[in-house]
Figure 1 (cartoon, rainbow, N blue to C red):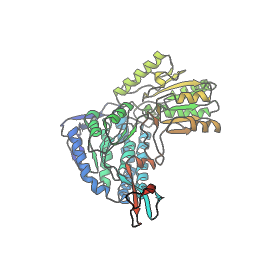
Figure 2: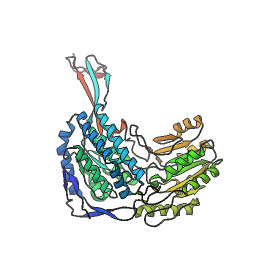
Figure 3: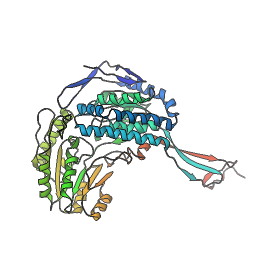
Figure 4: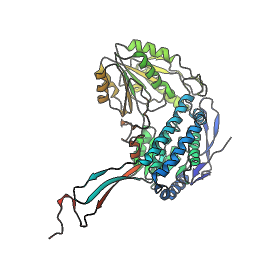
Length: 488
């Protein structure tokens, strides 16, 4: 069994803790190796290495930094199938989705490399003569990057690519469910020519590695994707850092009575059971007009019963396992709650051998039920009937989250009213609640996060500061706002 190492200051080293943990294939329980259980001392060493590398990296011209990011893109392309297999083996989703995970990382590095010749500021006229005004972007410093297991290449790319193009250095903690993917990701960065100390990797638990990163006085920024509770902990403990939080969702699909039902079923199946429901954009609620509820449910259940469960490496499989035993227990708990609260179980509801769980659908639920309010992060969809568009909007907005949303309708009136009225960072018309294309901003409202956006031009904002510059070439001390002071 291979024992892996952490990466600090350009070298693969053992953790000072001397402890290790294992990562397992959720489809069959086989170990993928031992990984260092990092600690505060390792984080301190990583932060020192990141600051040592910071002056050289931040002063490297952004187009030159971009060349390294383009090389990362190329290496991701060359190794796409191998990396996708690593993702499937470590977190379980089917191979086609894992290839999409790597493709997203490819797209992000390509896009952010292009920002190396932009990183736009702006100019504006001064209120005074012979004075020039502009803004420019400057790096923040050392960033702590903490990522989840469900997109173990795409999400580190979303954060690390913009962090690097802006001139920051990074201390990276991947999820303890996908440490091997984190190591493979960093290996590619090193091969692409990222200088020593610019990216540092410390594996380990949230308690032993995540908390020291969050609280570290010499880390100036935190970028985190994960649970709402952890996000709240970060907000309370990070201090005066630049913090970006993406904290999940309880996303809804509205199916109106004029919808293309076959298309809506496609969207609900993919949204609810893609990645085994283990994504923050999962469509865990389907809000269906009563006029088409029975027809929709008949088509929906027929499609679900055709889904094949198994190892994601099998090309015939549609739905892989849950990531670990805790995830299975969580889904079981919510299924029990749904039954107790009176939601009708249309299909599924049972744990299968290992970490597999039947695709599950509740029907005739009310908007206030626990299964319609809380993020389950598993293959569970709750159908909520409504009598009109107004009620549909009320239901879709009735949760604490506001990430992705969708409406299936042939009415342009309904479509544009939905865009206006749905409280979410993303709204799809006649498509499912997936994520975003990498050149558009991704993020949500309410308790989905703290208002930051990743990807696109706004993805640069999280990892840079704005500096305002004034150049006065008048030859005299000019004062704004017509101030006269010390003058006779």
